[in-house]
Image (cartoon, rainbow, N blue to C red; front, top):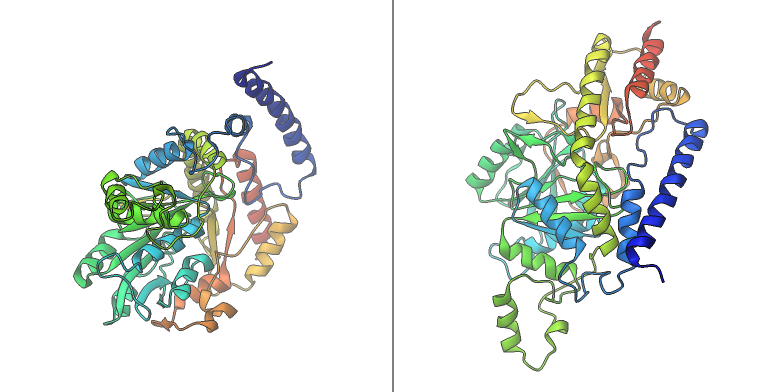
Length: 435
């Protein structure tokens, strides 16, 4: 009978051959020459998942094994960001939800209460805002900066009211927000800070990685993101109390994944008649990832540095070569030496006075094999869901409206190289030559 290592090696070789042939077929038949995303995993990740599936004693967080791949990936990625605790979830959206379940929990000091306000950017993603609605919190929408697509600091200051209790920073498109200013505002007004870093792993503000400033941060490993576990996310915090509570909330309210033995001993001594593996100490849901996602993450993390460098190089090249169209386009050029961008997509905006629409441009790009999409939700206050819940808007959201009207993305991922960038530049040259 073949051993596990032999089986995994055989599968890995077969999968490599399959992917090699599949890549050739896709290159010949794909609608897009420059897609927004592409498959950035290979036989390495598949083999690691197969090895995991062949170890039935170690498939979930509830496994008795002390050598879980989920926990290894948590340590790797939270260590990279520079945060003490990483708690992997089944999605970035679940991480956002878990963060606010922590902040509204009766066990924490100065918890958020229904009616409390949380300042958020008006350009966002629905699942970043949905936890506020679900928990009776009131989002306060502020405008963003055109240079970094993040919340405008002056507008954040204007948004402060007696009911303001938290700021939810969303680092959009790989651009870091000015976290020095955000944290100064938070300290002045005694506010919680949550960083949604799902689009910006590896981005830095003033030499420090985003996701390491606030009380908690959230991260996503969805298929189109910088690294992927297909679905998956992570909550991070330097606050041990928040971390333990997040582990309990993640796993149906039981404490078997808690790290603190003192925490376990406290409850076990009070409830000796209840099996400690099934002792519910708080509210809980099922936000657990599987060991397969942990396996995927470990292999992807090894490639993250190369992936990130490719994104940066792609962006720098496009910035340089598209600069000649500055009469028409607002490029995502960063001239602030405190900023390191990790480039989720490549965002572009038409200037207000141009004689054509964003639909004219994106239709031309799509026709020529360059995939496009809007900038996240665009103006979130324009969506039907916005009217269903209580909210507040600060200012006129001028930049948000411009992004909604004139903004779009193209791909910049690690599967894009010289040929794809040449295609983008030549396509813009063709579009603008008679304008």
